[in-house]
Length: 148
Image (cartoon, rainbow, N blue to C red; front, side, top):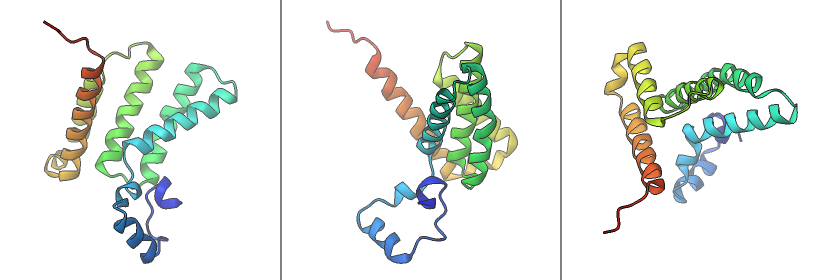
């Protein structure tokens, strides 16, 4: 369970890992942006059950996201997702949430300012590439098409 939630594979026995590998499911054990999104969604849901205001909930989640990033091993994909979620939560709190591409670019800039060698990391490159492609695909599905 720790492997699925925070990416710890120390307690995972080799047989179980082999079964995940045979089924082609080892990517489930890698922490990604989806895990950060689920974490943020769960926290927002819990805070709504506790009847906290929207602003207070968003602020608390912004403060708790770095904790999850640290617990899960600080891989480039998790750092990207953490930064993106914190920027998105801040923008939502201020009523300025507009474009996911700007948030993605800001996350890349912040990560590269922190460590320029991230640019050489395949994990960094793939994380941003895949996120960009998913963003483009999701926006192209909602845009009207010219049908001449």
